[in-house]
Length: 70
Image (cartoon, rainbow, N blue to C red):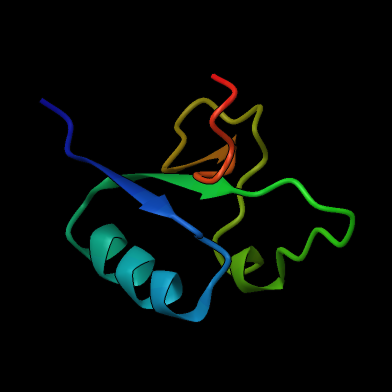
């Protein structure tokens, strides 16, 4: 079974450390990114993958933990 990690706020400083640790351990990382008018993914530039690649180790999911509509 593939190991997976879900990291909320993946563009934050603390998440960067957790993401790096998870990658070294071989995890597939799923990150929650909040939709906003100023989308800042600079902290993801070192690991960003084209979503069309066959083997993905980083998957971004848009969401907000404060949004209770769903």
